[in-house]
Amino acid sequence: MGGTGYDVESSALRRYANAADHAADQVEKIRTRINGLKLSSGVFGRLSESDSLKADYDKQSEEAVDDLHGVKQSLGGIADGVRLTADTYDNNEDDQVHALGGGQA
View 1 (cartoon, helix red, strand yellow):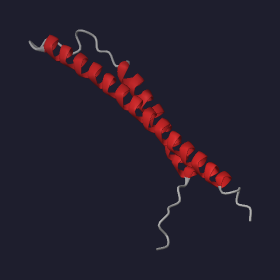
View 2 (cartoon, rainbow, N blue to C red):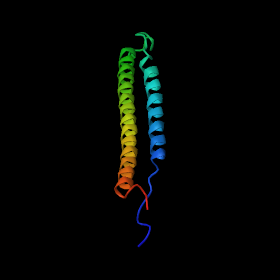
View 3 (cartoon, helix red, strand yellow):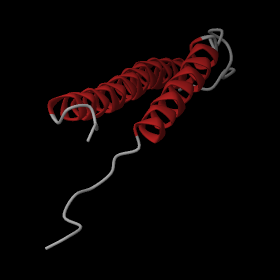
């Protein structure tokens, strides 16, 4: 029974973590833009529902900002977890090499 092991490319894991961090930064930029989109009280004109429309817009906007904060936090957590995984694999590999005599014959 040969070939039962596997090889982990920790550098690929770290690249993925960096991509997740970059995505989190992009989400934060979008969140900041959305948070700045404030409407004045008369934006919907003289419609009988104008106050209700603005209140609904404000609520939806605030919820979108909150949701995007959650996305940013999740992406940051993924990046941290993937980096920790890469570090753990690297440390385990170093420990195994050391335990087996450093690869010396």
